[in-house]
Image (tube, rainbow, N blue to C red; front, side, top):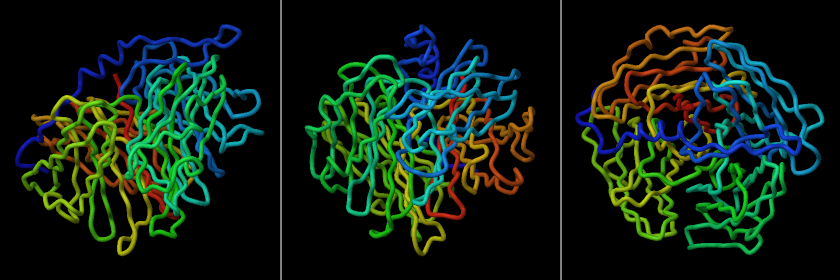
Length: 473
């Protein structure tokens, strides 16, 4: 597939190298053993294969159902370590986990642990890993990336506390010291800083799940900002709709630890019952001027759409209201700041009649591009489809290869080796038949920076579930 020109966006390859070199602080248990790390980072990133250890954090969902932690190892050596389940009450519960070379495992909730309230710390004896958390519940199913570090700030550009919605915010403190946080919101009706969420204590090694509907008035859009006065956390949103307002399904989203100049989304489409909106949150003190650029698969010339987002506020851009975004045409998209005011961007997808799909999802995009990506997605607790999207955000063509990891082998997929992606090009692949059954871990490699996204939406229930890959250094 070839498009007419490259989009005007910056490939943040240097960010990846900066993250690999970022200062990492170990937080010890009372007995001196490590219990996680905290670092400055843009999105979850795998540690190098040669690392002595790696740690991942998976916040609780707050929802009853079948929970699983998915761990994939693309290295040549097996990995061993522990999964530690951390709830709001009681002592953490640890169990051993082993992952073979070029393989993945799916770990269910430990015996005696309340899966809805349990966050997870995954500590392994090396790098080269990707970790995701998946859920099947009565209200829908979904999957989200876990975090490779903790932060003192977290952002979400979307969410709803409307009558048909349940929005749960998980505040996970995996460290040996208590944290104190402030939570504020930029809504479609202005800012909201509930007194109940100011100076909120989060105990050491604990999980706190806040039902935002109890503290925020009914709002169609709630951009969320979590800042700590002391300590560091990991933050996730669970959003669910009951169908009474036309929306249905469940979505998990790891919050973004920092605003960025550009956010990229490889997947996208609207029309015939499918909706798409971009939510932009500006946490800064200056107005942000942003440009949305949608690159359609049909090769049409992309026309940037510019908007101004006031300081400390949020803005919604609806694809259905923009002539430049053609209905029924698949596309990639990016939102970037053009005046050096960093923002946070989520892409919202909805589906209902007359579409054959039903569901809702929203999650931040990728603030960087990389030549290699790892995706877990193995042994999900729900039946799912499997679509892969690879986008080249650069001004030069790249060649892309896709392989599955299973049974100790990395197997190249036929027809997906050295596939050329034109500048600004996108490749969409339905892997359901090619892989031959349930999704397997994937390794995507290119000779230039790309962005990778996977659609693992349930096939037997309401829900849209997309997850970005994990960049490899």
